[in-house]
Amino acid sequence: MPRYRDGSRKEFADPAPLGLMGFGMTTVLLNIHNAGLISSTGMGMILAVGIFYGGLAQVIAGVLEFKKGNTFGTLAFCSYGLFWLSLVALWVFPAVGWAGTVDASSMGTYFVMWGIFTAYMFIATLKKSGGLQVVFSSLAVLFLLLAAAEFTGIAAIKTIAGVEGIFCGASAIYVACAEVLNETYKRAVLPL
Image (cartoon, rainbow, N blue to C red):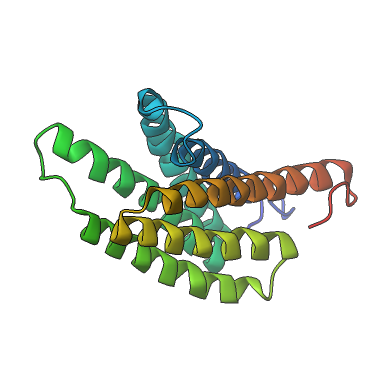
């Protein structure tokens, strides 16, 4: 643990709630759209949140987890922050002429790869809190549903993915809230 010049320990804030909120809120907003509850006119808001809260805030949280020596937190927050930045790029690059439109098969493969990554991260959560287990297991399912929607073109699968994604994002928001409240009140206000 780092120390001040006088020998006392430096205490660092826990960056996990920031990363979980960045992931959770962005996931909920995108999946409200996927579930058909908001129209495509809301995509500008989703792109902005995807870049700044889902992307940059999670990368910052990941770097701070690195400083704490937390490999899981570093990998999770940096990876999912960069996921959001790459997803926004996949949508925006064709619109500005920097790349062609990504075909459904390629997007399906993209989601499969993220699903594989998430599945092994879920295995790591088996040594962590039940709240994180819910977040990562539901995220693995979400990626597989999104891949299936891309591969098949069946709109109902994307709608189901949207509903499941709202649950996934809400579970991350819950874990972030529980971590903040439990630390603030120095007791288990919300179970993890």
